[in-house]
Length: 88
Image 1 (cartoon, one colour):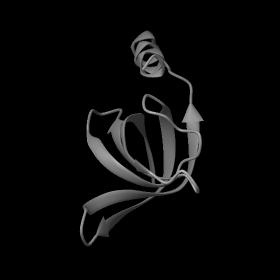
Image 2: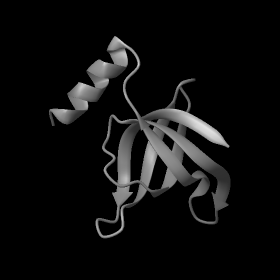
Image 3: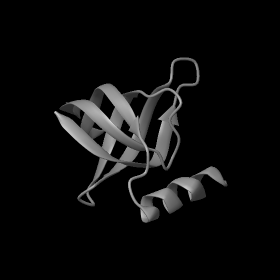
């Protein structure tokens, strides 16, 4: 399965191995929790994620990442959000 969107919040990150729990806003406006190894990813990054939906017994439905691609912003609004996320 493939999903695409922008990281809006990093909920948790293990600095030693880059395991990350994050909130992703998909292109259709839906939000989804994504989990997996995401080195060098920050809030505001646009990603194409490959993986599968899983149900965690405590946290519910999540997208478990097998692999990902970091994408460049595609329009001026996405570029503005990307640059604004870097100024914090």
